[in-house]
Amino acid sequence: MTLYPKLILDALATVRYPGNGKNLVEAEMVADNLRIDGMKVSFSLVFEKPTDPFMKSMLKAAETAIHTYVSPEVVVEIATESRQAARPEVGKLLPQVKNVIAVSSGKGGVGKSTVAANLAIALTHLGYKVGLLDADIFGPSVPKMFQVEDARPYAERIDGRDLIVPVEKYGIKLLSIGFFVNPDTATLWRGGMASNALKQLVGDAAWGELDYFILDTPPGTSDIHLTLLQTLAITGAVIVSTPQQVALADARKGVDMYTNEKVNVPILGLVENMAWFTPAELPENRYYLFGKEGCKQLAEQLNVPLLGQIPIVQSICESGDQGTPVALDTHTATGRAFLQLAAAVARQVDKRNLEQAPTRIVEVKK
Image (cartoon, rainbow, N blue to C red; front, top):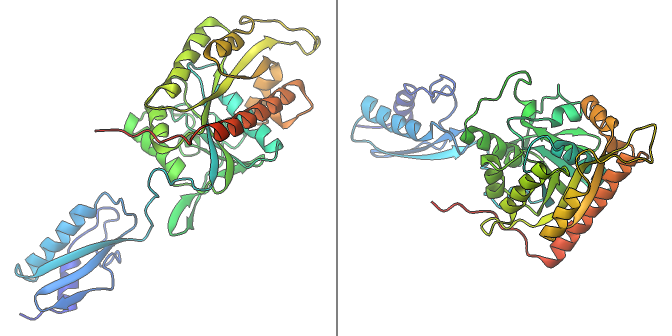
């Protein structure tokens, strides 16, 4: 029996690719490197991504089609190619990012996202290049806080890969799962789905060159935190708390999660949010609604810096809801407070990088 290319291609045309319903030839998945040597056939199948879920089944189906429609005696060798380069391995995901900062809290409702957003803006005021990732998969708030709820990031082909281009606002590169889901619908995902979505926002996005990559993490300790620790070498964590005892107890757990010997992420310091209330008409007065300096005392107990104390001012809430974070105006008391916080974070990062070895990514041993 004599083999020739059309025989092989006709056989491959009987195999349909589930991703688009087209056959392998029609979908242009058969590379132009078809070689025939006696009863031996070799060629490559081209997939969009190196992680294509149908890859193994397509290789088997192609071989079976040739044995069925040509001859069972044909020796088939099929290689694979992908149109898109593979995602870099963990540890090489963000080569142009100098520092990764996790903004974290033991419990919800302490203003962690507000602190993360305003810290990012304040760092840009200090001249740094900043990216902000909303890692709170189930309760994303960054789109609203930056008034970019209608933004729909697009993909761009960069170095052989289709990368998500972050939204830019106030000089900050932003990404959030909130850009890709219906804001009025609950995100009902299992942990694995949420973790995979987060990995895409980190590893399949064009973050480029950044001095600070801020992670607005979910409250508490969860799968998402573990995914971040397994994906990125986090330079340090900033723990946000309010002064009352119930919040401080949870802040301790947040600190423990990062300082655990298997994790070893340095704590850059604590931020006391809602430290006191100052009415607009009485700017000199301070009312300690949630207790006085509880976070400061905790910082002393844990031997970590108190990076800043942020007062309760009605404009913080209003500006967040309107998409114009208070740190944009450095002439206000709260704007200055966030600027001081950013300067303190930058000092602690420099100190940490000078005195400690780079953080290692958490490895999972199966």
